[in-house]
Image 1 (cartoon, rainbow, N blue to C red):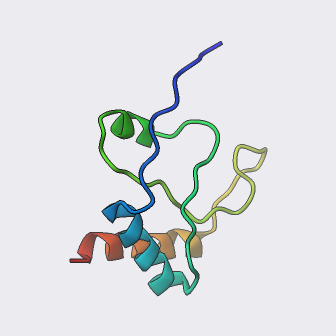
Image 2: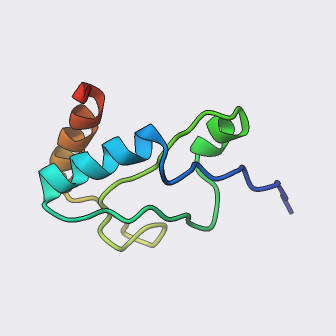
Length: 89
């Protein structure tokens, strides 16, 4: 059994969260709602170092299941979201 203390959450008013929300709204035309999830992500390492990070992607509702897959159009649009985040001033 592996047990790890949960990393502190990124504040919902962090710049990275706001930029991600803006990018999702501009690319996908939906309002993103910041929330935490169970389990661990690679972001925990950065959050433990007090760096504000956000994890996000468009998923096909088959995560960690047999025949897991991703939708290429989701990957393309997610890349647009990430580019938008990086190019915001």
